[in-house]
Image 1 (cartoon, helix red, strand yellow):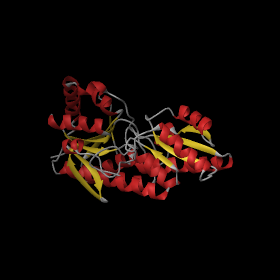
Image 2: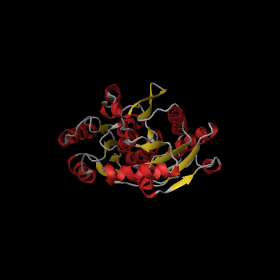
Image 3: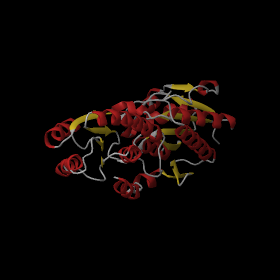
Image 4: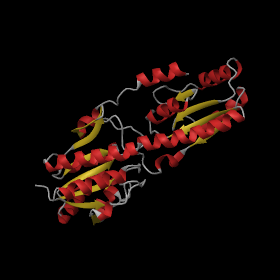
Length: 320
C-alpha cells in the first residue's frame, strides 16, 4: 500500500513541469497519500533534500515556467553505491514510490530505483520532444510557441532588408522543434538531423530563391549542433543575393508560462502516474499516443524508435 509519494524534476527544465508537480500532489492527496517534493532532482535524493507538499504549496504554480523543485545533474547516479544511498534516504523518509519528470536519462534513473524496490513512474518533461513512447513531451508545445513568435518577428525585419535569417532552435539531435517551427512560420528551408546537411545544396537553393524566384527574403530553420550558423550566414552573404543573419534562440525556448496544451498534458500525465503507483505498478513511463494517455515499461520505451515524422517533412516540401 502506498502511503507517501515523492516527486522530482530532473534534467533540463521545461514549461509544464510545475503543472505536473501540482497534478501529482493534488491527485495523491485526494487519495489520502502524502506527497514529498525532492529538490534538485536525483541530487536531492542523495542529499535528502525533501519537502512535504500540501495543496497550498502547489496552488499558484500551474502557470509558472521552470520547476518549483529545481533540477541538477548527478552523473554519479549511475553508480550502484549512489543508488543505494538514495534508496536508504527515501526509506528513512518513508517514501514508498516516486514520480520522476524529465528526459531519457531521468527514465533510466527511475528504472534503476524500481529494480531496487522503489516503484517509479517517469513523465516526459523536455522541450526537445525526443523521448520515445509518447507523441509529445511536456514543454514542447510552449517551446514551439516561443520559436514561432520569435521567427515571425524576424520575418518582418528580413523582408525589409532583403535578408536570409538562419534561425537555430534547440532539439538535442531531434528535429521536431525545427520542423514544426518551419511549417508554422512558412520557412523556405528546414535543416534537421533527419534531413541531413549539405552546405553546397543549401547555398545553391538560396541562390535560386534570390535570383530565379526573386524572393526578397528567406527563413532557414536549423536544429542545434548541426553547423556553425554564424559561419553559414557569412557564406550566404558572400555567395547569394541575400544578406545572411544568424539568430540562436537559445535558452529563451525553455522559459515562459506554459501553454494551455502543456498545462493540460502535464495534468493528465500526473494523474496517470499517481493512478499507476496506487495500483502498485512501477518501472513504467507515461505518454500520449493518438491523444490517449497511456503507459509502457520504461525499458520498452527506451528501446523503441522515435515516431517517424516523414509525413510532416513531405508536407513541408509540398508547401515550399
